[in-house]
Image (cartoon, rainbow, N blue to C red; front, top):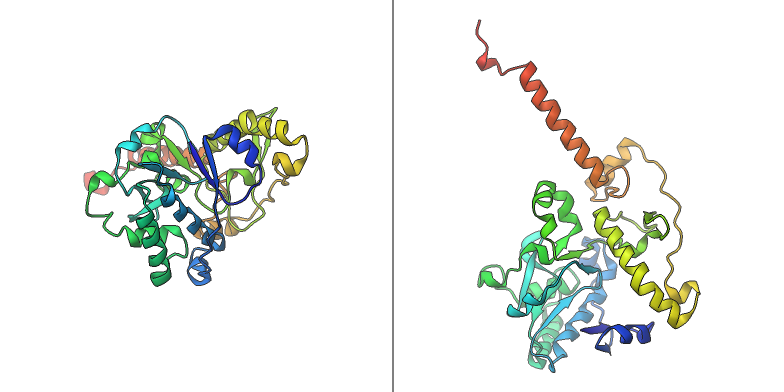
Length: 300
């Protein structure tokens, strides 16, 4: 396994886990206008991932964002060719650049940098650059379309709940999309409870089971390694700050948050609550059909 990092923080711990850890220079798009459209000014630095094409001592690689969680073996991805990726839930004719198969090449790396200088990015980040550069992905070769289970986004879980209920158990990689990440929450290892929400704008759109799985993995494997290497200090171990529970909001405010894509998926708008409401609605509709048959079926 190979890990590309932007700073040396906790590098010794990373080197104890990964076969190779390489320090790279951070790239920044500075495209505030396009980044503002997504309300994600933090995405400019994602251009740093373009450095992965310099890994020419490998014949083929699979890139994965740091906010992905692997649920099962995915070695079969190495049978795919460049550039293989899953569709993005926001615009399916574009691929999501959180997981993709690529072939390292200094020539491709130079072309990508030149493309950035000449054309910029339509979203200010790496996904806009890569979709514009590999612009035949949507139509040229269906074999380069990875099944959605290799990049299951938390947003899609709630936007198409029936599909998640049918296919979600097959997921191999979960991608915690959005500004709020699993580490924005706090975790009680004794009770196994994830608490709080980010103080930043926006709410985490994460299916609770995956959120708990991420924290269980962190607590059982990552945290002990950090404690052994750096001792019991909040900064070095990465202990999350405790966040007070969010205040209750009015129905009007909840509606505004839903319309802005900021539903409280760990609270009143949780997966379980949505499921219960759907079941209740379907039962009520079935009952109404029985009690009030369609007028066309009534005889005078």
